[in-house]
Amino acid sequence: MNMNNENRNNQNKKLDKRRIMVNIYQLGFALNEAVLFLDTHPSDPEAIEYYNQIKEKYNEAVNIYADYFGPLLASNVTSENYWMWVATPMPWELED
Image 1: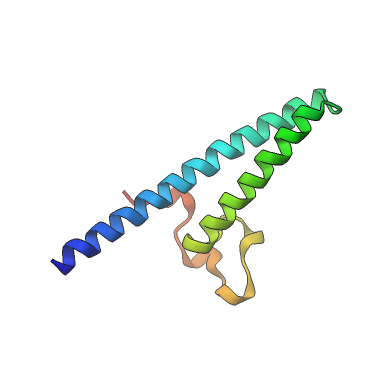
Image 2 (image 1 turned 180 degrees about the vertical axis):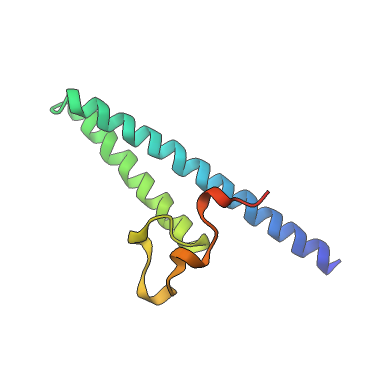
């Protein structure tokens, strides 16, 4: 019975990790699209507001991932969590 719970917990962790990564990919795409739009419309207040909202959500998602699974960016590495950059699987090494 304990083994089943452990397997379920591992499965849930993998699903959460994958869900957070998909969210980061989607937000990153939206952020890049907003940047491209702002390159040609630099004074559009709605676009600037959208960019700021997406940037905040993106940074939050990256920080959540770093807190639970290790840093995605070198800037997320802190001295208190070892040099996690090489100690955890890279994001593209998602377990199946």
